[in-house]
Image (cartoon, rainbow, N blue to C red):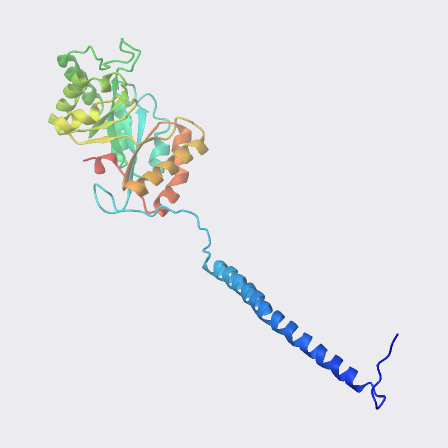
Length: 295
């Protein structure tokens, strides 16, 4: 290789040139890297801050709790009225109902062996008393119980049946239908029934066993105090199933201020009510007799 030599024989200029070249390359390399580095750092910082803010702003997921509302119709705390149907044949479970020590209402079927006795003991122990009036169900054209009101019953017969039924069950303050899917769907029948009950100063509760019931419509026309059942609690007889339906009734009471519940004279039903009373009251719901809820 050909070598270049300077007059003094020294390699210093080559060294100096190399150093200058390295410095220049380093300068431009640094200029390119530093802005991009800053940009990447800034982006990374932005992402970190975003994530941090997201974490800070995230709210814990809490269970939905329905808060009590004042009653839509009667003011004050939410109310639940529990009616127990079908009393009259036996008084074996009466002591269990009394032992709950809450204002339950017993709906008593007329003309049965224990009808009068149950009504008297219920009244003496602060329970409500209603007449559970037999009325014609769909698919039945004949009376299946004594003094059942049929769609073919005359006005005189309907009034006679009601009068005799009320005489067999003392301390009655209101009436609800026992069965009655056909009768409560018949305007003529319901107009006779509700007009008579209004004259007697009684209220009517539609057990609402069928969607086609006209009881509410006729009650408004007649001007009688009236309510409609909201929840049947013991179509499924197990204690746990009845408790689940009572929880459903709780939600309705808290959402709307009031709820009308119907069950039956069954051991499991009474046990479920006994177990649920503390929870119902803890949720701010007042248990009342149906007479105190109906308007």
